[in-house]
Image (tube, rainbow, N blue to C red; front, side, top):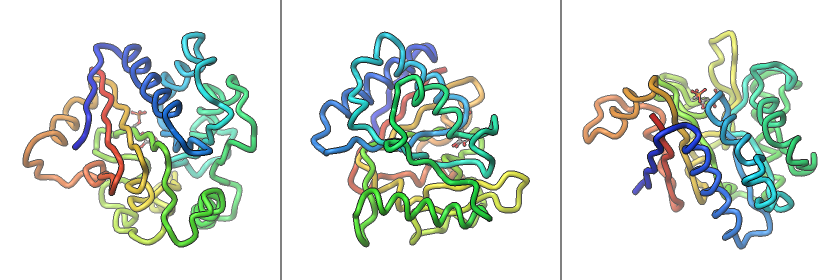
Length: 233
Ligand code: 6PG
């Protein structure tokens, strides 16, 4: 069962979500609090809120490790890079050490190689053997077409049930690397962050009782964790 929080404004949404993440990090009994960051534009406001004077000294940054739920197949210096956005809006200002930042290496020869490598990076960090690594928190956005991370409608990656990461959107000018359903759904907590007029229609469809379209975001179902939606109009 999902927990849905609605905010009047994006500012209120970012504060609510920052408080939520802080409470998870403070309550976590694990050695590390592992977060898979969402890309796109909406989360930028959240990341900036997390390093605002209201929050920056409250987060246990020293126990937090940051990964990405997906990445564009671009250089980390490219303005489209999810890594660049998160570094600029949060990780650098918070002084997060490089050893706590686990980005997708998009300098490898292909999106497939980067995805394969990222899976190894994640498994090596969690040392979970054949088990699927369990993130403390996976943050997700929602596209107006119902995609999340880089799990887009009609993409073969939607059927990936073995690998924990994969290349996606290979037929497009901008291939992606994404966490797959098995990895995302294994998380202890999954939180969607959705804001804006343009998302109202897709949200009402996804939350409708008998949604006729199997949007990718609807297959986000934590196998044993908790699902949250943070929404603002
Ligand atoms: C990306 C994201 C993607 C994003 C949605 C929503 O790399 O773009 O991972 O899934 O979360 O497209 O994006 P906005 O928040 O910018 O609307």
